Amino acid sequence: MRKAVAQLFDKHGEVTGELVLKAAANPKSPLHPRFEWDDKEAGHKYRLIQAEQLIRSYQIVIGGSRVPQYVYAPVKAAFVRAEAVLTDQSLGRDVLKRMHAEAEALNHRNERMAKLLEPRLREPVEREIKTMRNATKRIGELATAS
Image (tube, rainbow, N blue to C red; front, side, top):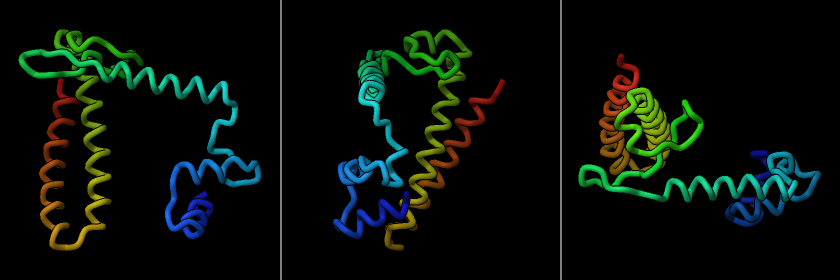
């Protein structure tokens, strides 16, 4: 699949989702199996994504700060009201664990991207990423504390 995407880049000088999708539409393409071709199923999955984006878009004010009205709680596999996180220690820990995982993923992406920068920019960025790593570590410790 990587080769197929690289070939698209070589042919067009760039690669876009539209180019990949067009190439993948060919059943003989190595990219073809990576996509859902049943339009009914794909449509349903996309509408679920849209529904979750809608849920995440709502905000409320708590303690003078705007916060999400609904927060995804993996332990429930559903969104819960923000107020529930304030009063339910288990949900609070669940949210903290998710924050930690998301921060780890962001740190990892930032570390990879920093390597693309010229040294004059890379070095201070890497120092800031190290600071973020330390904060992320502390969030992880809080998430697992009893």
